Length: 224
Ligand code: PRP
Ligand code: URA
Image (cartoon, rainbow, N blue to C red; front, side, top):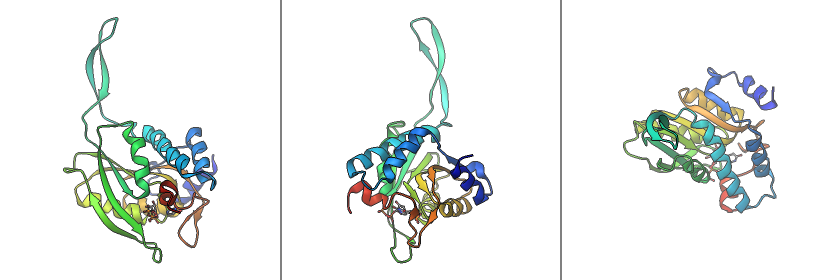
């Protein structure tokens, strides 16, 4: 068993099947590049997009399909296509924005929602400053994106807001998570499946993920 799977078991979640770590070597390789403090903004941004695509492939495994008729060069047959266009991707600003294109490359007709949150530097609690969601949201299958799940406060608040607007079928996708955030998010929203690129060790005294990758927003947008 990998170190991160052992770490996940140690959290003792109510329903561990609601958490999936994408342990694919391509995802893990790209996360290592993200962690490197010498990886520049341009490469960092591209890697976040690529990881979101690879993780999205797994998170969209249960997309609804329907059979249509198609004529091959050999004969007529029935074959599946994605059913309906009822997808939404909801980005938590700022850093969640970096994952959007990666997922839209898989489901280009998805609507995009935005929730603006920042962590207060003193309290580490999320503060909401913007919310614009596809309307109506009830029937859409929703993926919420944020590269970092640290204390879980931002994800919990964003999903509270989505549910308040009527959102029901919600998944959460992050690139790096801390055990503390996974536990808190699962306890607050046990119906939300959490997809993780890598489950790290812990939070430090500033509620940053260790070893993590630093401040995801700053590294995507080159603001530090
Ligand atoms: C980061 C990150 C998450 C949040 C995670 O955002 O993108 O939204 O912190 O931390 P939490 O799980 O403890 O809530 P930040 O507040 O740095 O804002 P930014 O994306 O605008 O940089
Ligand atoms: N937000 C980040 O960007 N990084 C962390 O490690 C924790 C919260």
